[in-house]
Amino acid sequence: MRTIDAPSKYISTVFHRQSISYTSTYRPLKYIRQLDLPDGKLLFNELTGEMILLDTEEFAKYATSFPIEDTLVKELISRWFLIPDHINDLQLAKQLMAVFESINLGFSQPKIKDFTILPTTDCNARCFYCYELGSSKKWMTEEIAKDVVSFILRSKVDGSIRLRWFGGEPLYNANIIDYICKSLNKMKVDFASTMISNGYLFDDVMIERAKHLWRLKRVQITLDGTEKIYNRTKAYIYNNVESPFERVIHNIEALLKNDISVTIRLNMDLHNVDDLFNLSNFLLEKFKDYKNYYITPYLLYENNNLPKKPYERDLLNERRLQLKQFLEEKIRFKNEYARVMKYINHCMADTNTSIMILPDGKLGKCEHYIDSGFVGDIYNGITDIKIFNSYKKMSTPLEKCDQCELRPICIYLACCPNVKRYCSEYEKNVKIQELDNYIYSVYNYKKEKNNDV
Image (cartoon, rainbow, N blue to C red):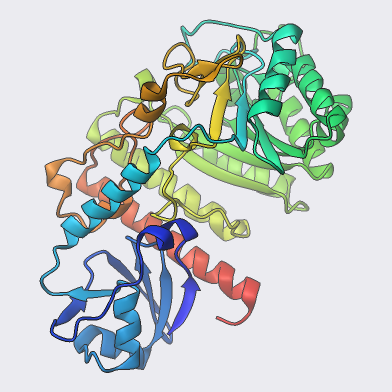
């Protein structure tokens, strides 16, 4: 038996090794995904996130008999791949999640490591699908930015911190980014930053500032299609200018040349589903000489992310999975592990050490809530613990989901407006395929990295 991917320290802290009962009989845990390799089986534990490799002989023992005195069986029991017959798998999963939620709800006014800062909630694009449509448009002033710096200095952890620039379009108020980063550099604060941007406003001078002043390491840029579809979808506010598509593609390459990684997000919907395959081929050819970029497709649902008709969802799911598999074959797998029970937290909303700073100085927890759900402000810190903790509440899965073998990895926060609470049988099969792809990707990555799998 070889360990391919160990449980995270968070899982190990809560889910200790299982003790052996010599009076019990054992069986495989329900939530084990098994995948074939030429010389054995990959086993992925959905409860713990651990992945192991059993050779053919070991798997035969795992699948057919469980003599407790056997060394392999003892190890499989201790790692929760085998459990006693009398244990209820579903109750075990529920208990684990309840413990995670209980731990996470223990608020103790922590120091902050991740600061998501919105220089503005306004934007230079007019995407028809933007979830911020109708939200108030606010701009951070230099006076507020000065107070943001003071807040960061008072509330940050010791050591390095991370800044994440968001909006609106953060580059629409780039002077505020300059001000905050200059101040932190002057104070000798150790930080690095990332950004979510449409990429339009970058130029060579700004990229130079981004690299050295902002310490920008990665940018996520959304592309909605090839030139005609992209330009129509983004609907930038500028008139009589060069093609926005060509400008953004140029800027992506300029970022890559300056060693700033770029994640290209493809938003897929019925209006562009076929065009994204053409776009992907174009991008793969355009950036073939670079290694610091990644392309990933997401489904786009209109009307506040409400699902479409079932047959449309199935079509989009199928096409997205096809595109994702195509891209993963072309682009070397990045070690961007799925959050499959690897962490107690799921996103910035339920992470104690993460905070969002709005342009007017209010503090929030989720970028989907920029006009409500505030937890405090930069002057008084986190003051509304009730709202702060409300972001950590997990949703209750539907009763029909209780028997699903994917139950432990379908975990969503109750406050999240961006996920569906149910799936069709087809969508379930898509999730299974994606999980399998993830397992194989991790295995291949570890094999290449360690050269000893």
